[in-house]
Length: 253
Image 1 (spheres, helix red, strand yellow):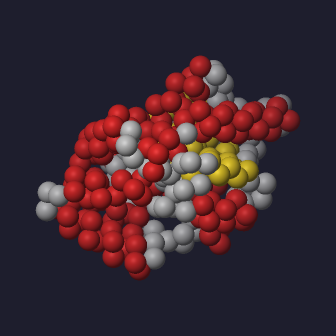
Image 2: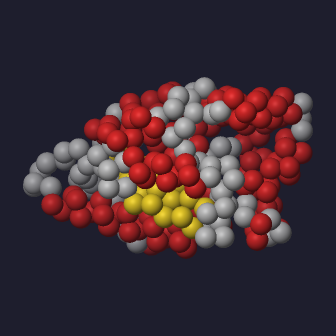
C-alpha cells in the first residue's frame, strides 16, 4: 500500500480527485487529499504546512496549482519526496500578461462578480465537448463556490508571486509522471512537455479531447496513469536494500 497525497488545483477540493480517490482505494492504496492551499497565503507556506502535517516519505500527485505546490514541496525537501505526478501544470512563472489577467479577475472577485468570471472562463477550463455537460459544469461551479472569492483572491496572488522553476527540474531524481489535456488552454501541453523533457526519466502523457480539468474530463485515463506510476514506485522500493529508505524509495506500513 502506498499513501498518496493528492493536491487540488486553484479553488478546488477533494471533489476534483473523486474518481481517482475511489480507484486508488480499490487498488489498495491510501489516497489523502490535502487542503493546505486553502489555509495559507503563499506557496512556500503551503509547502511548509504539508511537510509538517505529513511526516515521512511523500508521494505527491498535484493538478494545476497542486502540481506547482508539489514542485515547491520538492524544492524545500527533495529527500522527503519519493514520487511526483504533475497534471495539467507548469514550472513557469506567470507572464506579465497573465499577471494582468489575474489582477483584473481579483478585482472582480472582490466586487462580488465571481460567477461572471467563472462563466467567462469555462472555455479555458473544459474541452469543448464538456462545456455543455450540465452536471460537470454545475459541479465545477459548486466546487469553486465552496472555496469562495476570498480563496480565489489569495490563491491567485500566491500564483502571481511564484518563481520560475524550470532550471531546477533536472535535479529531480524520483519517478515523475507528467500528464495534460491535449486541448488545455490554461496550461498548454508545451508546459508539460518542457517539464517532461527536463526531468530525467519522466513519463509524459497527453490526453486527447481533454482540457484543463483532466481528472474529471478523462477520469479513467488519469486513474490508469496514476496506478502505472505507483507500480513504478513500488518496483523501485522492492529493489531498495532491506531497511533502507533512501531518496526515491518508500517504506510504508
